[in-house]
Length: 432
Ligand SMILES: Cc1ncc(COP(=O)(O)O)c(C=O)c1O
Image (cartoon, rainbow, N blue to C red; front, side, top):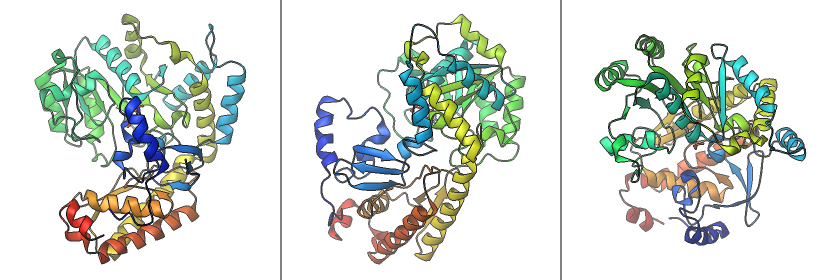
């Protein structure tokens, strides 16, 4: 690696201590510095505000990377959200009695989804999807699931790899390990190909599927009629259809990307940006399906705690007021156009991808060395960046222009150093 001007970060020193006493070092795989550029990635923060992060040495970075994996569309430490939450905390964030904020949030989510009548809350994406799967199985009486997309860490999902260890590889993260998942879950969870209705139909018929769960858009747009055919088929076969809007929700459309396609599932799931950084996730669904939760035990103490609920109420309120989804989509469109323009200018082949508000690119040959080089150069220039940006309203035009100017310079370096033909990390080291 080109380590000139970069020194091992204080954060990395702490990380080496962390991995000795915290299993895995961090509770979220995506925050492991090995996913970026280990030695130099700041790894820990002392302060985060807007889209800026200060590391342990008080060096400021602009976050053009994962923005805590998409939790903060309104920026880190949004003052209005924080103040509202603090006000609620001062009055007690939990008690023997329930918080009426649950009803306020439920009403807003039902207003967004007039086809639905019932809501359920939890704190994380993986757990609320496990709830959705349990409710669905309780409703249909069928075990088997067909899925497309990433849906978290729970057994029902990872069990897909028991049948074929590559089953989850199409969806966001490759080669997920799954030891410890009960082996008798084998052949209960089947992947289907996005935009291939016949593949889904085949899987449904062959495997007695009771639940279909999917992200309706991540890197690719759904083909015309694909989603409406899928919805109609699930209705006909009495299959529970769940849309996972954990990542897509509120990024392009208020209420989720399914609204853009004018189609409704039986249950829609929201997470990530819903609480602008405070833990809250939700299921919004049809009464007849959701009521099946009465036939199975689903209950947890901290699902009644109200910081996430308060944050979600205020977040949705602000989003509506400023139309945040429009702001980040416009910014993302510009960034995508610029990614392509800069790559063309330097004759580098890239594939631009992602929902507009979540723009990214990869090199056609999936060259991780390029990506590492860019990450390292960006760090030197004060940006956190690898290849995908979770945009927030705090990313100003000025910041974006500065980021793109730097990317242009880095692409020119890539070209000059002729690292387009390198094949191994040793070739790369030799050049530096
Ligand atoms: C579409 C989707 N579903 C589910 C999850 C899991 O959410 P969590 O990490 O909160 O458990 C994620 C997280 O990245 C996601 O993107």
